Structure formats: structure tokens, C-alpha cells
Image (cartoon, rainbow, N blue to C red; front, side, top):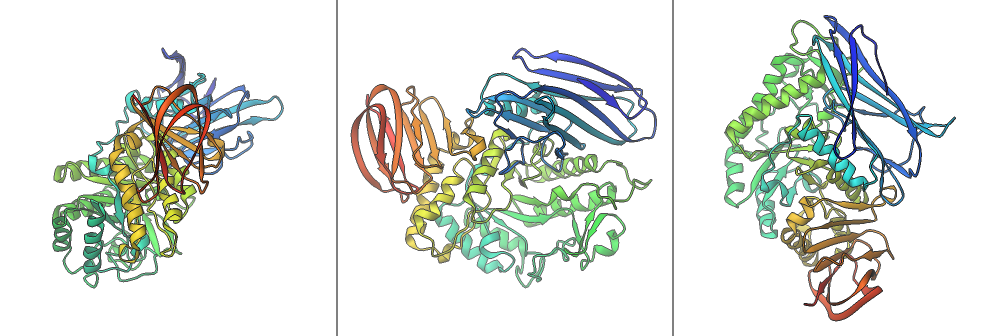
Length: 577
């Protein structure tokens, strides 16, 4: 590995080999000149392209293709993604994972095929920017073990947490219970009475937590951010926020409230105070992005959130749009009034200061962050990571939630709120829930407009998710064929395995060591195929999407067998003792 830097500092590097075979390149800069600006460390090397079918990184979404070395590469920083790329084979084996310990500052990872010789040309640029530090160390991890790609990614997350000092935030148990979101169901048009009535219905359905989104702070319903920044309750919608939150608490529910962290609107009172302390201005949104390098800006934001939790009795916050904290071409240079020269360091300060103050008020505070800001530096503060907005796209929810599960360890992974047209067939609507099965479900269909069959379907799946909560959300996930967007996903513990199928006519290989296999049908196919190498006497129960038993039978399994199964239903195969 060739390492260079554009600054006049002493550069040292050495290689460490871990006990499991992974390799770490340790890079140090010493005697960095004072007042250094625009510092960059660059690492370059190649490895052979062999048995590589695709490429995974935390925000790849639907693009799993291998890139050429002239492509743009992947960017990460504390507010965007995470510095890791994994190459995998068609059968899901790791064929090269590269990760960087620098999760705060900007990292550009360009790992692409060099056409001339068929190697993977690797170039990593680590942008230190302006720094007054005398020394700097970064580590680059390489993993070429012949293991499942999921294991390689999962162990990168553990490396960041255990070896790189980025300990994840405590995750309260409430963070992994299904939540009702008011975003898709009401958007910005609601009143306190409507929220409380919907919460009453949500409680009856089994929800324990609600998230009230954008709209509580403004009478404007155009979805822009021109009125953000003051964070005062509009009395036309909520007459008394404290009493309103208390009323929801009396129903036995927790209450989370939305805030747009970076925006200060042109129509807000705060605009006059902060209009000259902005990273940039978004004319379309009629708002500026606050420059958190100023300590008074961070203090203002922190106090807003602490005051809301303290005075209104909130149980948590949805902190949105953190990925807007990055430098643009027109971002002002650092000045003497700032206590940070790096925006990403300033963001870390903001979140650290805010969480310390919030936890002093409520130790088990719930904090939701959203893709793309889901990396190891962000996980120190947020205990709920949500899939990026994808209304009515089960595929996007499946891919987004599995991607998050692969890297997020014990942090709660949430689906984007599930929504459907009120005339949708319950079994078709249920496919969206199946797509989100391995995450904490957020739900955003108006409950007063749902028919009884839709409600029965939702309650069935909520009961299923409660019964298998630890297995579905905490067990290591096996997601087959990432190049095909995960057509089969599986989790298992000592006795039980749960498999979700998202493609027709697949053959599920049963684990002979498990007493029970549950296969959930995420398709419209009426047949499920299983394979077992050992003859087994089993009881098979077919259950539809409403939780009603369709058929029970005893079978002797050997080789490939098939079972009938309804759309979004499941079969439970239990070995007879």
C-alpha cells in the first residue's frame, strides 16, 4: 500500500495482522505544521478481481454493480454513510472488504476495476482539512477471508465500536416496538384532538409509541422549511403541548416529536439572528443551513431540544436532515468566532453536547436518525436508524432495512412508515409489512379509514413481531443474493429459524438442527418449496395473513417438498419428537 500526503509532515505506516486473518494498515502523520489547511492523506493499492459479482456499501440502495476505477467513488463523513465497501461473490461470500477508521471527516473511497490488467484499483482519500493537531492516525482494514459477506460487514461494525472507540448509544427496549407515525397519514394537517383520537386507535391496535412529524410548528402546509427555526407550537393545531403530550401518555403511549435540525427559515424570527451564520441558503426551501461551527448556534439548537423534552415531557426526538451538514462551494471559510474549523467535528460536538444534556433530563431518550446519516459516528447518539423515505415501496423498505441491519449491530433499525391506498387488498398490503419484517415497523395508515380485514392483518403481524422480537431484530441476519436485492432473508437462534421469501419458486434449505422453521411468503405465489437432506417427521401449519389457520398436516420430509401458502401468509414446520 502506497501512502502519501499533500502536507509537509512526517509520515509513518506499519501493517498489523489480526488473529482472524484481517489486515490493518496503520498510518500516522507526525509533526504536522501549524495552521495546516486542506490536508489530505491518500492510500493506493491493487488486488486481483476474482469471483466478484457485486459491491455493497451502506447507501448503495439498488446499485450493487462493480465500478470502473474512473468512477466517482463513495463519499462518507459523520453526516453521510460510512467508510466501508464489500465485494461479494454470486454465492454471498466475501471477496474483499475495505473499511476506514476515520468516520467523522470526509473520506472518498474509489475502488474500481482497472481495465488494463483486471485488478481492483483502490484509492482512498482522507480529507483532514484545516487542522491544528500535531499528530494524526488513521487505520485501513482489509478483509479477504472466505466467509459470508454479512459476517465481514458485521465485524467491521464491531471493529469501529470496539477498536476505534465509537461506542453505540444505549438502545431502550421501546426503540424496538412498532411505532405509529403521523407523517404519511396526516402530513402537516392535524390538530391535537385528531392526534389524540388517532393515538387512542393506535393503542387499541397494539402500538406503544407515536411520532408526530412536521407541521406542529407552522400553519403553512406547503412542506417547505421557511418557518423552521423558532420551534414554537402553533396554537391553531396544538393549544397546549404539555397537556397534549400528557393526554397521549395517559393512553399508555410514548411521544416523539420531529425537528429539522439544520434549517432556519427565512420567515422565522431566528432568521435575523442567524442569517449571517449559515453554511448555505436553499432558495427553493426558503431556508438556510445553520453553521454549527459557531458555538452559539450549537447552544441554541441544544437548548431547543432540551427545553422541548423538559417542558413538554417528550419521550424522544426525530432529528431530521443531519446530512445537510456538509461544505458547499459557497460555504464561508472558518473565522475567529468559530470554535471548530471542520463541520463534521462541529456536528460531533453538537450531538455530544445535546445528548449529554438530554440524558440528564431523560436517560432512556429515543432518538431517530435516517439514512443516509447512519454511520458509526452517528450511532454514538441515535438509537433508532430509519430507512430513507420510500412511500408504498416494499422493495425499497426491504433493501434499506436489510442494509441497515447488516451494519448496525444492536441499534434499532426502523422501516420507513408503511402506507397504502385505503382500497388495497389486505393480503397485498401485507406484502409491505413482510418486506419490513426484519426491522422495527413504523406504520402510517389512518386507522379510522382501515377496514376490519386490514386491521386484522396488521394485528396478526404485530403479534408475530412481538412473539419473535428478539429473533427478528437482534439475531445476525443472512441476506442471500445481494446482487438480486435479497430474495431470501433468514435469522436463527438455537431452536428456531425464520425465513422470508421475496422471490417465487425458491427452494428453502431447512436447517436440520432447528426444531422449528417459519417461512413467511413475501410473494403472491401459492407454493413454497423446502429441501432437507435428512428424513424428518414434521407438523406443518399453514397460516394466512390474518393469523388464521388454513391447514394443519403431518408430513415426512425428504429431499424437495412443496406446501401451499397464501399471499403474505406463512408456514410453520415443527419437528415431531
